[in-house]
Length: 190
Image (tube, rainbow, N blue to C red; front, side):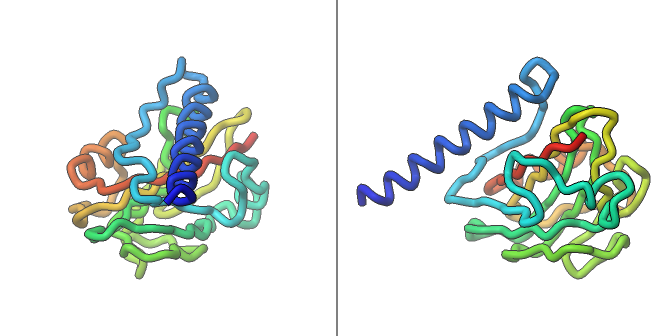
């Protein structure tokens, strides 16, 4: 019992540190307007295997890199029971929540594979138009060092979306009452 409590305490401390890092490095006075309902609840977490949490995103996934339009693999752990879908959003918090990738109605699976096709309907959910004007994923291409956050929301339902472009605020409005847990992964580039 003591060991389990120690793991929970360590997880809570790590989550607090991650939130503080986001707030301190946002360059917006500590406000980044991330919707983090039930952050890490029940151990819900993600891992992006191509870079460490809080580290630099590989240049092959940026600007002129060979993987600029290749979505990264996302490993998902401890998905809450009752989850009917996942929403995955990658944003640049230093560029007014610029959306690099929005995948909604993904099945609650432990792996979203890399290189999803650039189409609305995929076998892993529906991809929306990002702020570059493209369907699917586009990596970072900032004028200076920016912070990128991949957020995964475990939802108790699917959401009704049409092919198109949505802002981060619009997506949050759609999922707000359906979030069971949230997990995030931070990367930097520039």
